[in-house]
Image 1 (tube, rainbow, N blue to C red):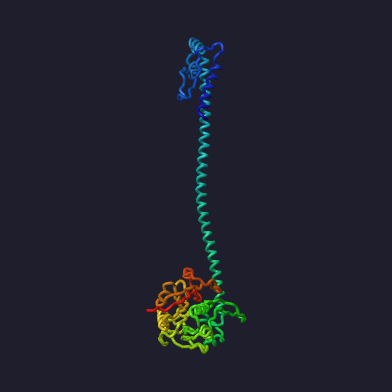
Image 2 (cartoon, rainbow, N blue to C red):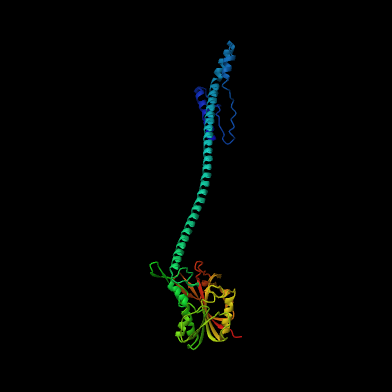
Length: 420
């Protein structure tokens, strides 16, 4: 209850007591009315007050005749004052009691409200912790979903590798080069071809199902290497009246094709070849050994050969820098102004049991005795598709296949012999 309302009620009670206990014919002009000033700290006016307990005094003290007379006189003179005082005091007590009761009720409600607020705060705290827990669980669920997605992708890759492994196993002829991968199972027919030097590493790899049905198993870099050589020769030379050395000629038809195009060709390899043509001469030797006369050739070609030299994969002598030694011998065998056409695996540098993968620095070291006049890159897009680009950065990030060692890119160069 507001204090202003309490003061107004007290004032109304007092004025009502004045009206009820003053006879109409005894009203005095000097009768004072309590005026409560709410702006002066609720100070009371100067009014004589007589406690209602004086009634007991009148009843108990004035028992004699004189006392009773005095009592009657006093009651006559002061009774209305006493009755008014008693009424006023009783009303004030009732108001105060009502006020205290309401204060008590409000305190109970306030306590209940505080308890509810405390419960709400606890609930909010629990909800905050629950929210944090839910967020953590959601994050874990997202991580699990990512791992499931990665697992799904990994399973797909494993399935692809499994299919590729099956295809490789179905290929009839094994190729001991990075071009066709490692094949463990071959047919007797293909073994016979290899033994006689008549097995050739063709750009289209053919596989065979168990029922003997043939299928396209993949495409290697041979799809553009020979075309690159023929295009370069036609651009560098006006006629075919030049001497060409083909290094690493086994498993390749290039020497035979160039001889058929009326070029004078010498083929060199540590493995035998069974091809014959009037324009083709074969020398079974190691390119690192100085067997041929210096300055004998106008052009030397080495397609996917230098990366194998010195690793012993084809039964050759092993040596860490035999590829660099082979290039030095090629430089010696070239005539002044001679051309050197080569292709090597390119991308992120690596060394596999089959071959080397060259990066930019390793390739520069390999051809340090030559001037590069043209360079292009073959990029493997998938198992069946290759594209040509001059963008070195695109080729430099390619990686070889760790399963079959197939390169992801190939560098193709046309170089000129340095003249001292």
